[in-house]
Length: 130
Image (cartoon, rainbow, N blue to C red; front, top):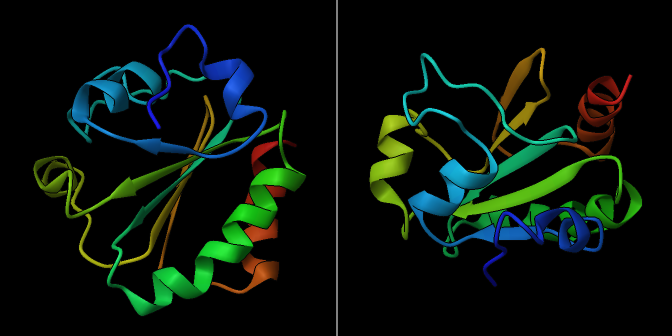
């Protein structure tokens, strides 16, 4: 589903958001499409899951990602980006493997590549909201 910037706070508090196009990515996440100069635009911290529908580790991580999105609702925004639908964006953001998780708030950014344990994800999520 597509979430407009106006309604994104309400809807993201309920569930994760699938980024449908580059404009939506720029509207919700990055003020600049250049990874070297970007600044996170959100009012809450976020995690971005770059995934592929055919990727087994991505499929394995999805139930945990959904669970965490529910648990951290209202504290952290959860986004998903399909690398096959947004190839140019992924090239610019140097996404080289899936899943890639980018954790960010207004001060810091952290990237984790590959399947992660629940403990590893929770650790990063908790750091975002401290």
